[in-house]
Image (cartoon, rainbow, N blue to C red; front, side, top):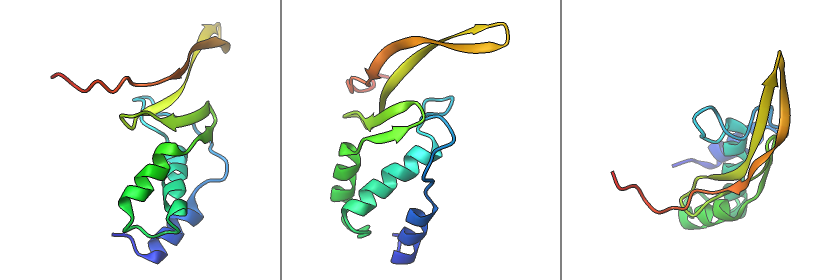
Length: 112
């Protein structure tokens, strides 16, 4: 469990402006988004890490402003965000449009 000093350190260390994309190459949330998500949960319970259900509930409701746009969590706790279509022409990576708005995991479960 985190003590008050650890919670304070986490909240103090979170970036005010994210410098990386909302997700890494594997689709996992970036460090900036994760810290914002954790901070939102901890802020909701005023740092009381013993209130796990309330922390999770706050994290499920939060909308984070990331470099790739709004970021929320799906029912399966996966990122919900816009997927962008880009085209590389020569040495330039050009924005074409939004391929899918607020793409979310349908949370059907894994059948493996």
